[in-house]
Image (cartoon, rainbow, N blue to C red):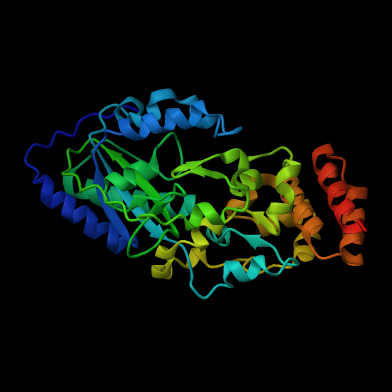
Length: 360
C-alpha cells in the first residue's frame, strides 16, 4: 500500500511524539521510540552478511532487495518509524542453564513458552495506531512485528531502544535482551530519538558461550551454524557436526543471552499471554516425544512452536534423545516412533539417535 499524506499541517509533532510514547506505555509496551528512515548503514551490513551466505536457507532475507533497508521504497510515503519494545521473560522460570544440565528434559527458548508474540504485538500496535488516528485523523501507516522485510534491530537502535550486541540481538542497559520488537511505519514527520549508544565494551561472553561457534565475529552470526536457525528455520536435516552440540535444545537456543551480563537487569513480563503453557518451562523429553501429530497441533495452538511443524519437532526431539543418558525407555520410544514414521528426513534422525543410545 502507498501512503496518502495526511492533510495535517496544524499538528505539533513534538507534542504528538510525546503523546504516542505515553499511549504506548499505557497499552503495555515497555518502551517506545521514533526512528528516521535512513537505514543505509544497516543495509550495507546486511548485504555483506548475505554475500557470505550466512543466511543459510532463509531465502526471504535476500528476496526483497533494497526494500528491507529503504522503508520508503517498501511503503511509499514513510517518513518516520515508531519502534516498540515488549518484555517477555519471567525471572522465576526454571533457569535455562539448569535445564541444559538436565539432559532428560527439553530446553525451549524462553520467548516461545507462551502465546505467539506476533499476535500479541500486532494487536497492541493496532490499538496504538487507532489512538493516533483519533488524535490526528486518518494517517498513512502500517504495523509490523518480525514480519515483512523490516530491519527491526537497526530501527530499534536508531529509535534509542537499545544497541545491537555482539550476538546481534538488541540490548537495553535497564532491561537486558529478553524482549520483542514491533514497528509502525508512518507518514507523520515525527521528531526522532537519539540513537542508543553501545555498551558491550570488550566483553565476548556471548561469542565464547555459543555451543556451535555460530557468532563468527562480533555482530556476525552464521545462521547455518546457529542452533536457533537449525531447530526452527531449517526444515531439512540437522548437520551431523552440530548434533552433539545441540544437547537438549529442542526449539531455539538462549545461550548467548543467558551469559550476557546485561540480563541481570531482566524485568518480569507484564503480559499474561507469555506465561508458559503445557509445562513447556521444564518438560520431560519423553513426554513431548509421545505426542502424535494431532496432540502436537493441539498443544501448540497459538504458540510460535507450531510454525515449525510436526516433522521438525520430532527431528529436534530425536536429536535431544540421542544426546540423553542411555535408557531402555528412550530406545523403546525411538523404535516405536520409527515404526510409525515414513518421513525420510525424520527417520534419519531417529536412526542417528538410536545409534547414539545403543553405542557401547
